[in-house]
Amino acid sequence: MRRPLGVLAAVTTAATLTACGPSADDARDAAAGAASQVTAPADTATPAPSRRPDKQPQEEPDDCRVSVARPDVAALTIVAGAARRDCVRPALLRIRVKRAVPGDDPVVKSGATRDGRITLRLPCKPGTYYTVATDYRGGTATSKAVRLTCATPTPARTHTAAPTPAPTAPRTQAPTEATAKAATTVGTAVENEVVRLTNAERAKGGCGPLTHDSRLRRAAYEHSADMAKNDYFEHDSQDGRDVGDRISATGFTASAWAENIAMGQRTAAEVVKGWMNSDGHRRNIMNCAYTHIGVGAAKDGQGRLYWTQDFARR
Image (tube, rainbow, N blue to C red; front, side):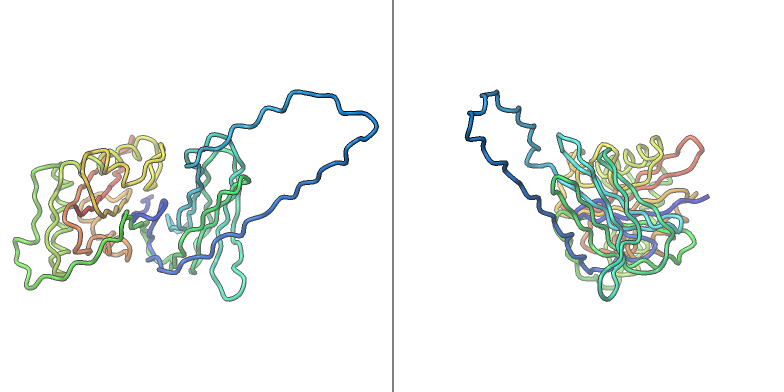
């Protein structure tokens, strides 16, 4: 059974676009709780015996945080996740998927874990959803809202990630046939075919061609290979790195970036068509501000292909 497509744009988290395009609406932050403290009266008859002070618990580092991914669609299932990152002490992590409606937003599914990472899945019903995560130490995170239509036979997952928002460059006039072609000095034949087809689509909208960069290709291929080897389908690597981390590790300096992922499509034409049929993936492909691309395709033990497109602008 074919698995979904995916797109990434930085957020913040893991993020994702789906077979349904995400909305730009922001969800409200989750409310924080408060704890009270009671002190017992002192015994005035006899002094309390002295004792060694209790050992203070190890404090969390300043960068301990809760991250959350927007709800996404995979195989007609809504998927949402959360994680505690760079934390020393364990804590109960709670996640809730909410549906945005007039009045109070209902919780459609919730869960909790002490493992530091949790993923929820529920049947896809059209609507606008967002994810709220919190731990008992007070860390909270709320994703942006995303509108899900659950309508595509091959659902796509997208997330547009950029450390700084990528501006949309002006459309060029009268693209020539040459602008639809990409540099094909790196990557395999099937990867370069994805680049060629991607640039052909960009040319239709007046965008210049993307250059297939060897460092971006390495970041894309290593992510596809890691997903294929470890049987997962996410924009965040299992070691906690996101797209920006993987791109930076190759030495490519990007001022803006985004990612599309997919699994199960058998050919370059099939995966590019799937991405173009998804609003979020198509926005990444048709963003004229991006100038470079890396494409990586890798097979798992059953011969299924995992695909990654990394877009960047210097």
